[in-house]
Length: 405
Image 1 (cartoon, rainbow, N blue to C red):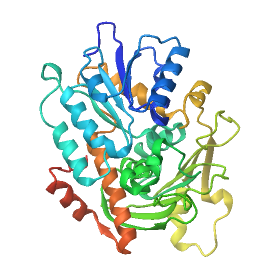
Image 2 (spheres, helix red, strand yellow):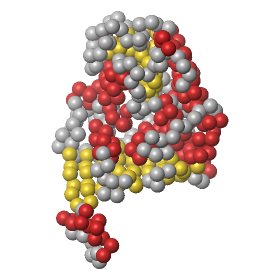
Image 3 (cartoon, rainbow, N blue to C red):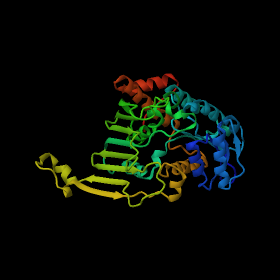
């Protein structure tokens, strides 16, 4: 468990792109000490060591195998930042170790592997019989403008939630070791690799489970000259059990965009919008609006049935525009508008607090993967996929879906 100084001794498994982002953000947290890294790729290990040494951290154990790290008694918690298709095997070892863990999305690439991982995590264990903190990384929840949208939606400011639209227009997949992120076999497909973030946001914002998923998309532009089969564009429509509907619009050849992510949430009394910059942006432009609240006029709502003419601007309601600031250090430390820091900060605080619960459970991670798998299957067949069928497959592999709170 954490040492007596209230410090979390952290091991990072996988020191590629996202592993390095976690390391840079961990260095900003005074209650964290990175004590070990593990990666079978020597250049990645050396890059991580150089980053840590540059920051004045010299006593770091560098390992080739994650199993060796998990045997170290002075590692309290681990971050799993390895390629998607390795998560299932790595998590089996992590869960056996009893260490706190944040595993990057996606939890696994297959529904069966997700179910097995969640079932294993629910077994009694941990140091001294105390269950470790197990957290699935979903940093988009913590992008400041999106976090404010979630908060105001939870407060009921726009009434009953009816429509959610998420648009990501971005650059193609970046080059990684062995191009593992450019094949469906290793990633689970783009709607699992990339879009579990958005399916997680849908569930979190709407506080409901899906009912039906329909998708259309394909590989239109990117990576056609290399051995790749990942799609680069898609529409996904999700009907939720609450009666709300959500839509994802993904385009990965649209980097020439003002915002990378745009979220629009409409309720019975108004609308909330949040905008996030491109992941390559390293400075926060405080002159840019990245959050908007639009509230309908109660007078118009009461009278619209009898109106014969469109309302004038002042009759529609009120619009408030704002900028949710992002600390300059956080913009430099990562590629996700400060969200990796905010997520890691909450993980560390929870790990240092006995009995604290994760913001994002492993089951949350599993259900987001199920939505991505369902979207890919809908795309392949041209037919909607029922959530009940996906849940049945999950249960057949040992998983159990809790009823929404």
